[in-house]
Length: 126
Figure (tube, helix red, strand yellow):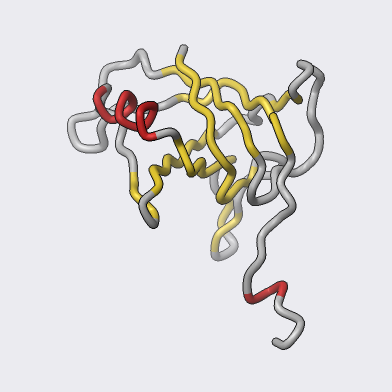
């Protein structure tokens, strides 16, 4: 098992994501990953993306993802933008020849709950 820490950029861990009326997987996009941790992941063949100079990785699961707080208790709240989390994942399966190394998410530990996103939907002038 491997662990990576970062900041939630997008997340849907309480309910499956729905896009254009179609149900998808549970998912979380982790950003602001430490450059050394991101390089270690890339060295294992895990595809990383760069967003405004920060490493990102999307994790998905077809199964409900266990989420715990910093004390190890079950966490039942949402994971808003800006939450600091640690993700435990399994990367022991052989890599896919096109898509790289898969990361099977095992657990999320919430270290700090974020304030949520700020953007056009939060702009009072719109």
